[in-house]
Length: 284
Image (cartoon, rainbow, N blue to C red; front, side):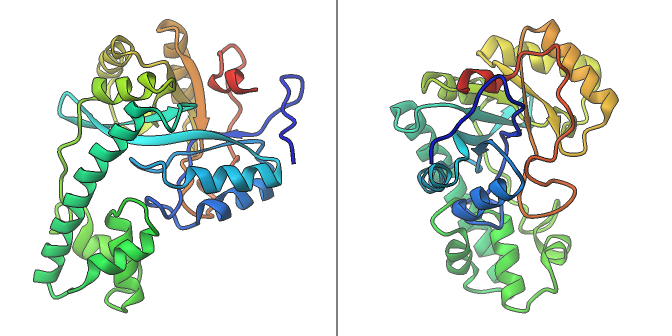
C-alpha cells in the first residue's frame, strides 16, 4: 500500500517510539500495527543506540500504509549530564551511522556483561543469555534483565526488579561512558539526518541551563527540539516553542512509546503550536 501523505490533510505524527530491540515491549512489526490502530500516519522507530528494527518496521509500514522514518535515540553527555539525542531521517546505510551504532553497541554490550556479573553475585545466574533472547537481537539493557527476573519468578514485576536490583543506586545500575553530545549530533548529521533534542522537560534544567544546553546543541549542528511529548505541561510546551523560535530550530513531537499505556500511547499527543516549523514537513 502506498503512503498517501499530503500537507493539505491533518497528519498524526509520532517521531519517538521504542520496541523490544531496546527497552520497549513490542516487536517492530507489532509497533507498526499498533501505530496503524491508533491512526498514526507517520512513525519513527527510535530504539536506543540501534537501528536493527528499522527494516522490519518499514516493511510492515509499507504493507499497512504507515510512513516509517528512520530513527534512533542516542545516549550522550553534556556538562556531565546524560542527554538523549534523537536522530531522524538519516541514511541507515551511511558509514557514519553504522560506525556510531557499532561504537554504542560495544558500550552497551560491556555494560550488559557488568550487570550480569553483578546480578550473578546477588544470586541471579544466567540472566545475560535470557536478556539477550528477550532483546531479540537488539541492545540489551536493564529492562531486559528485569523481564528475565519476572519470567523466572525472582521478582513480582518489573517495578520490583528496578526497586530492589536495577534502579538508581542499586547494583544493577551500571553507568556507561557515553560520547559527548557534539559527537552524537555529528554522527546524525553526517548520515544526512536531523538531530533532535529529546524530551527536554525530563532534564529538570533551569531556564538558564536549558539555554546553555541549546546553545551547545545548536553549535554542534542540532536542528530540532521535541516540543510535544507525552504528558508535557502546557506552560513548558510554550517555553520550548519560544526557544524554537529564539534559536531558529524545528519542532518535533513523539510519545516516547514503550508499551501500550494511556500515559504514553502512540499518536496521542497535544497540539503543536501552529507558528513552529515542524521537522516532519521535509518528509511529506
